[in-house]
Structures are given as structure tokens and as C-alpha cells.
Length: 168
Length: 96
Image (cartoon, rainbow over all chains, first blue to last red; front, side):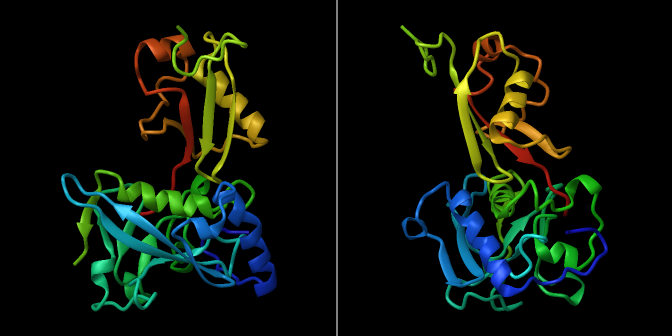
């Protein structure tokens, strides 16, 4: 189970896939994946389009790539990616990162302490991989959360007054 | 004429709760004298979940209802705090 200051351990891919597929219909509220704009890249990877709306500006589209290799003992990996490459390269793809300033619950770092992109939020795997400090009440709880919590937390920040447009 | 959300066969409105921790949702009939706290507690029972320390109650607009939990539903309606009786349970996160 997730805990602060521990190295996340990947699950057996078969088990991780089963966990992901068990939660997918719940998160989608019963809608077929084909009726959404979500893209399943492989057994364990999903891309979810999200929209950021800065005050008075046109909507900005982002693409959140979730990977479920450690799920659900740990939250999904979550990073923003370039929709063409479905990956993120620091420098080339910074326009695909949202700028979220002053939000107490989430921040987006292009390259956090040399370990790559970090969506700094306790509902992402990377948050635990960098051993970020965390209050007990915020530690990922596999019994009461699924990956909807990850998507909703990021989407919420993109619709909040803390969202300031693209990083580049 | 019944107000939006009224369910004449019950006499009280139908309320809707969406748990953003899981995307599970429930709806059930309420009484006008129920407090938001009571309705929130009922939602957990209906969801077969327990309240977590991180949880907060909001309107679907994202407006926090944590300072209104003692309000009766009829007061909540009359004060026009949110549109309708659609609520969401948000788990706050650490980060930033």
C-alpha cells in the first residue's frame, strides 16, 4: 500500500491490468471507452484529454497520460504529453504543460530535481517516487480512491483561478 | 407548482451526490428539514463508503459547503447557495 518515503513497487502486469480494467467502467460511469475522447494506448496506458480555462482566455487542451503499472496499491503515473508523440521531452514539449500557480494542492514541474516532469499531487505515482513530503490524510488510499481521483484533481486545477495558461 | 427537484410522491426533493474520489454517485429522496450534514452522512451510507479526513462537500460548481453543513435543506434552497441539489464529495490532495 502507498506510504510516504517508500519506493513504489510495480505490480505484476496481469494484476495491474486487472485492477485498471475493474475500475475503468466505474470511472467512466458506465460509458463505453469508445464513446469518450480517451485513448487506450496499451494494456496499462490511457490518455485523457483535459481542458484548461484561464480567466478570459480560450480553452487550452492538454493530454494526461496515465500508466497503471503500480495500480492500485499506488496511484497511476500521470504526466502531460505531446499528443503527437504521446510522450514528453523537456524543451520541445513545454507548451503541452499547464502553468498552475499558487494552488495549494497541485503544481506542475517541467523537471523536478532532475527526475523529469512532476505533477506534484498526492494522487500521482511520481509524487511518491520523488519522496515528496505528505500529510497522512493525503496519502493515496487504494480502498477509497481510484484513478478518478487523479483525473479529477488535475482537471479541477485546470479549471481553477490558479490556472494561468501554457508553460511555454 | 413543484420546484425543481421536488418529488411529489415523496414530498421532498431528490438529492444527488457524486464522489470525485471514485466517480461513484448516488441519489435519494430527502426531507426539507434534513441538514446538509445528515444528507452527506446518508450519501456515504448509500455509497457504502466511510468519510475520510480529506473529504469536503461542495456544490457541483466547486463552491465549498463546509460552512453550511448545519443548514436545513429548505434554508439551503431559500438562500440560493447553489443551483439545485447536486453535490460532490471532493478529497483534497497534497502537493505543490
